Length: 507
Ligand SMILES: Nc1ncnc2c1ncn2[C@@H]1O[C@H](COP(=O)(O)OP(=O)(O)OP(=O)(O)O)[C@@H](O)[C@H]1O
Ligand SMILES: [Mg+2]
Ligand SMILES: [Zn+2]
Image 1 (cartoon, helix red, strand yellow):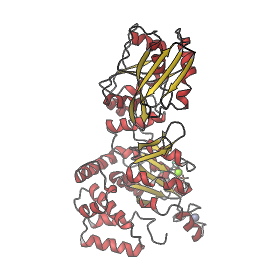
Image 2 (image 1 turned 30 degrees about the vertical axis):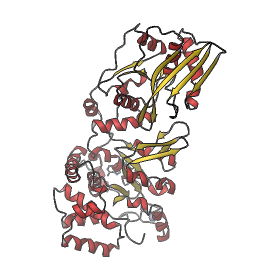
Image 3 (image 1 turned 90 degrees about the vertical axis):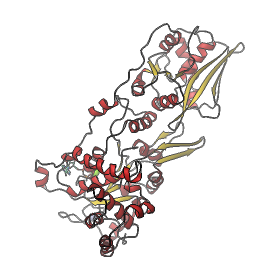
Image 4 (image 1 turned 135 degrees about the vertical axis):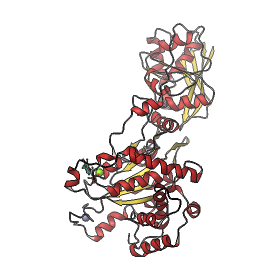
């Protein structure tokens, strides 16, 4: 007899319905699995066999053919165990009266019949809902991922026995209850706050400008100056994630399999890949199943590259395209997969190999040639995508010892949100000043003769490179927005020229 059951395959964040067909014929005992299964799916036979027998049902001793259709999509992961087992039970007439039509099933089986958690449940649910599916069986341990999607009924079950009882109607189960995203978000807290950073007025201001205009930022300063501490504060002054954004971020982490208890990510991610990170771990990939990389896990949040010159050239090079496109496409033998990668980049570095160059209190022991070589490691195309380059010096003892921390992240965030609203209106969508091309710069950033004069002066005095010009103008636009000023004023240009540590031609 032939039986069919529904499951889903994931291609990036995109889910595609998969029909799991089991056909059982008299004949020599055999088990054949067709339809482009990967290694994990091929291994399913032993798990399914044991799971069925240990659930006090029979694994048929006949000729079994299992087909996963459509055949042109690679079937990856272990979540086909449950639908295959159900299809086999149905085809061998052990599920009399079971209602499997339209029920989408995902789950790995343990040998004892337990349904184990799988990755990618959230994107599968979202895609399946879009395609009109409304009933699901998922692993009990993945229940939280189903708690924020309305309009579907999701049954989070513990074992194959429960799945059979559910499908045959022998037992009643409650669907996963809907939870409120805003309540979860309200309760969530970042581990840090701007008010904990003493002094560093200039660096904090630069971070506010960066976040307001979506500008990437480089913090340069001696060891212990507080660069890492400042960077960690960046997400705390970004606007709250909307529910849609949170779902997008959560889907990526669902595939990566690193979701926490809440089942939804309500705070902006802050990712800190080590400088030894490979291109695959940064951008995504993998032999079996393609996993999102750090830049996708940082989607809608911050990617922090600590000690920028230590990263390999190829790793830094691989960031250029996603910084431009806000997505990353990973190619491999079986085709290409695209993941979102819309992150803000924050990088840090010491100003020289010894770390003390430019310090007011400590002496640099490096030769000019050493300093040049060190800085040259990050020169070029990546630096072109970083609009703000800020020097961070150590704070004094008195500042550290003082009780005053200055403004809280919540206060700064309010100003950021206002500046973002101005940009939304300007561009008629969620674009930020940092993404302006030459056309937009011309349209939205006209400079008075006085502003031009300041810019020209800075160019000559600081011997700035050509590419520094549009960078300064974009930053000036954001500073004007933070100032509620429709026109860019001389003081905005002046401040913008001060964030240009690495733009000099000598580099
Ligand atoms: N402005 C500050 N206010 C309060 N504490 C600070 C400040 N700056 C530094 N600290 C303290 O010093 C510690 C070291 O700072 P942090 O790790 O951010 O420095 P860093 O510039 O990243 O140094 P490195 O170059 O060694 O990575 C922090 O954990 C914090 O406790
Ligand atoms: Mg650090
Ligand atoms: Zn030095």
